[in-house]
Length: 371
Ligand SMILES: Cc1ncc(COP(=O)(O)O)c(C=O)c1O
Image 1 (spheres, rainbow, N blue to C red):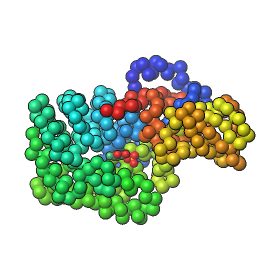
Image 2 (image 1 turned 90 degrees about the vertical axis):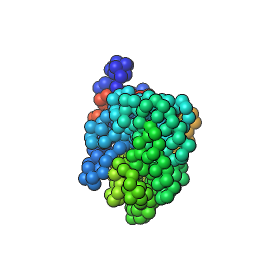
Image 3 (image 1 turned 45 degrees about the vertical axis):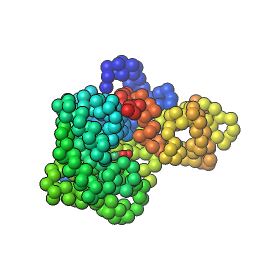
Image 4 (image 1 turned 90 degrees about the horizontal axis):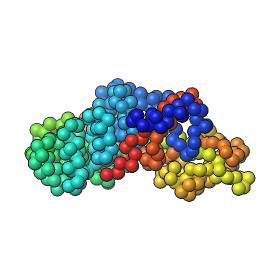
């Protein structure tokens, strides 16, 4: 945490959480620590390495907590996130995304001078750009080949196409091939564990098979990485998987929670009732600039019958069906985000809450790092 953050918020330490000005992002410290520890223990018991995807929390303090609990390194979605993490002294960083264009590749090369950074590729053109620049600058960059295991986002096709790209990377000057990754995002909403296990075996199995083909072809494969929060068990137990890279588990959210209750919902948005125009609804001061809604409406915590039904930019409408409490103007409520990653990105800091009081204020220092 930067000194300025500590100074700026020192007067809030010890404050009851209900006195925090709103909208604000609260972390239940005990629930979050339970989540961090549960995933770390799972990985250790299964003999897989844990590389948490930090685009969920975007905070160096929280990444350090995950590393202290046993993570081997971290995963980032963006180069800008990786730069912030590296500046805080984190060394083993996978950027599970394509770094395209001269400006970004120059930044990547600078990052790689002092940090053990791994970058995903899915095409030869990108490999050529990375190789030419890295070789010219005398830097070696570790490369992971990204496979499309069914999400149909980035990624080369598993099997021969991926093997061919891996061989191409392996001989490219300035680059060091280190393995394969494939995020099974399309399986994160498969609710039925047996079906999930079958589909992970089929789809993530393609990643494992490709890694085996590469080994048979004489390539050295140090990393075979996959998994999200919902598939962590099925993917983590799949023979041949070397690393898992879940992100959301640290906080969980109301979108994943019904199908993956292994983790506690540790993150809430604190909001204030600002208007009560009709008996059956109130308005709160948290709208779409305080709560993301692309994964559905967030859920109100601990007030039965109260439902967030609509958001505007600065307002949220809470309908008060029975048996909800009769909320009054000035009351504060907590809301579970439906998607924690995009909600966190709206805030500058977390209020870390223990026993209903502010224990610390943590900077979200990689917030907004989109490039
Ligand atoms: C490449 C990659 N790895 C890991 C994750 C983490 O997944 P989850 O948020 O389901 O834990 C994501 C999330 O989008 C991702 O894109």
